[in-house]
Image 1 (tube, one colour):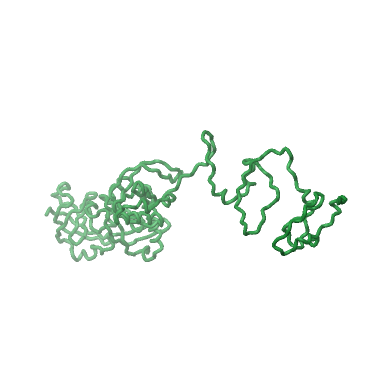
Image 2 (tube, rainbow, N blue to C red):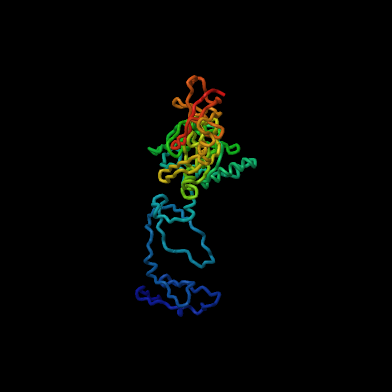
Length: 429
């Protein structure tokens, strides 16, 4: 007798108790129930106790693909399923999308996709590529393999390069003696326009063991630029500088004295024992001319004349001072805002005019040496350092005497306000 067809809407849900008697919950094995006609609801296996069976309406509601759907090739990259996790793979349908049609923001971002480099453009195609900016000097420096480039160096060479590396990384100052000044072509930034220009300028050369260090003229002075002949006359002096570029393959470095001077001025301004008036400090001679001398004192470049250097008259300063000399000086004034420093070298010693009236009374004859001439007058230095401003006697003329000649003079008078002694040259001696 045929079974009565049951309408799905009127079929009650079957409970777990309605299972065949052959299936015993908890038993490891069970027998397959007899096959039922298609009209009956299929029995789902593996459901836990107490869970209702799936309704047939859920199966009927699954969407079905159209019969003439085109075949779509899809590559899905996913991690393998872990059998120990107990999670079942998802049975929900996924919409197939042809590769390359989906926008980038709709695709899931996976770790594998981030690590895969972008595909190379095919030959013959003009794919737009963003220009790679050039590496800066510091980026090029940190990209070096120092163990490889410094292999085979001697102990002295390694120490020199390590000092250069430390100055470039930490902006610490180094000291070195200038051995020359040569013209070089290099790219510099114009302070007015801010553009990089190719210019040929003099660069002072400093050797750190056997490594040449070039300092452009634009990085030598803190204020106004000085003529090139000043750089050429600085050979032999010692300066401080900071490394600004390292060319390890070329075997040289570029430095800046201006940056080192800025750091020294900051240190000087914050030391009251150094910058107050009357303090005794050190200065280094940079360049010497016949009448002027350029010195450096804690990052300040100061021009000194003969009056600030010595009480006695000096015909040519180059005979007494040389680049690289270190002198004692007294601070006469300091303006931190204007970066102005006034110093005096001669005031480190007592003025020989004091007590000159007792040592050289009026009318006495003294031995002296002509130091120089100015405005028709002759400056004569006495052995104790006293300077006597002299004229010639009536029987002599200026062409008879030259600087460096020994003469006999007579003391005529003293002026306390000008702190000056006057006399007359009697003859050569």
